[in-house]
Length: 402
Ligand code: DI6
Ligand code: FE
Image (cartoon, rainbow, N blue to C red; front, side):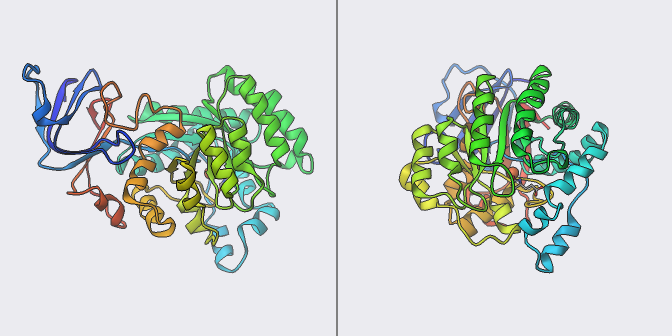
């Protein structure tokens, strides 16, 4: 495909504005890898230059999907802990007994950068196979300077091996490593003084994240980390209120976080604080499902407050071994009662916003990258409704079919 190309006879799900932005009999023109026109074919200017074109035969075109919360790079897997949970152990019990995140830390430390790239590639391929063009990848299973650097180098390399845009997030404050057992404050100092500067020196972190929870870091520790991160010019986001309400939503809002994620235990005040700050609620139905959670995130409060909602796979070995955005949308609809429009916005426009990249991706609007997913479906609802079926017809990144 040449750089200049027109897609004709498509149903465009532009996601422009607040809804689906549906355009029947739409045309989308790509020049120089970016969208030059997206709208009704009948609105194409009469003097539009002739170019190679594809008849989409009525297929749906959405923005390329954006998975804005993953832990895609890690060593090993936790199938054994899954079996323990089937026997009745809880996620928190396993974590407190030295399993959980720390068992993946052991496997990740033992892996080389090449090993990490090799084990993450099939997961990235699975996401891309369902139309994903941008993936956020967190560290957080290394927890030493060298192992956090190794993880995010592997994440960056994935973006050179596949036609995908990778954004990276430093999640050193994911768990307290064994060397710092009982000294979580000292470990936060280490993240601030050693890890973040080392990652920044290699431009390995686009953002800083933390896990604010009884089994992880306190709101005071997160507050200190976020203050330091922002002084370094790094945006922040937070694993907040997943297993209990420690006020993570309001803490995120106080720091102008790009997003607060999980949020099952967030209250209406937290939702309102996020709306005021423009902090996106990233909902992760895969983790809710896999941990068999009962507490639903406060969707009604988010809607009432005007808090914008994104969705992501949270792909990780412990709480969400999920690499399907389509199934994630189905879970968000079925388990959280989100609408089709909210689900699709969650993996496009709002996910882009949660990464601070809405100016570049996330909707089909002139000037943005031509990152597209073309689906063999007749209506956008079909993308949310089916389970275990992939109707992707083509994936376009920066104007190139791939
Ligand atoms: N919350 C989660 O659900 C993941 N991380 C986090 O802070 C789980 C990570 C894991 O169990 O490996
Ligand atoms: Fe996560």
